[in-house]
Length: 287
Image (cartoon, rainbow, N blue to C red; front, top):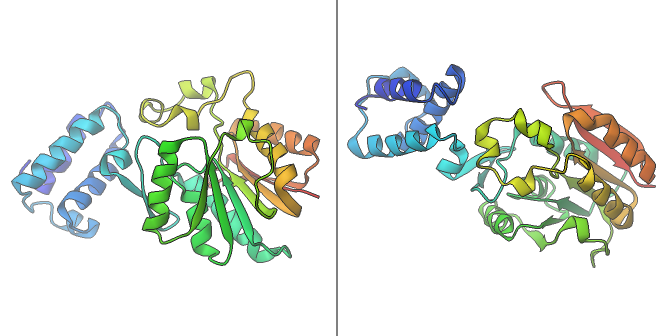
């Protein structure tokens, strides 16, 4: 690697079996931006700019890891979600754009509803991206977040500090967390729980199945809504009257998730598609 053009050529040659051409170019642009400090516009405008030895060594090391399918976010140690910076590692899922849509739905619902919102709970917080993004945009609310993973909570706490947000983090397994939290009732509970079935797993990219935490992804094939049942029961006991439950869901189980919430007694249930046209989110009201 001597120039930026050479870097792009090397990444294209070595990542062809892992990513398609567009993904490879986007990854290369991201990595060169990170290592060189040049803007993406500068990188594109000056492909003959030389890469110094130290930068070339870092780029080679990153390329080696990318060839294994390791996500670039884990390699760089950070990503962006809802316009905010987040640290990530293999203890947490990489935040995704469709989850940003879920956060947006919560924020717009708060702005349009008659419900006075003071307490919000995020179940299965992972990196803390949902809880922190909501707190950042609703600074006068009290936000709590649950996760079973001590490692994930460690990352989430770092991200709360990074984004200057005060979040109450709780280590708990929602499948066995039946009692009420010793807090005022929540007006909003939100969750992006595990929902990937074993069949779904066979359709997924190796950079997800080999590197991201399985406990945050996969559910039993014979009980794919196991977390939704537990969260719905918990919400019935811990949501205030007219409180809202927001869930990110498996695109193949939208109707089943709606039926589950109806059977539990939630009302005004809405199933919403993501930007790709897939069933991705559900909202229900506790009366």
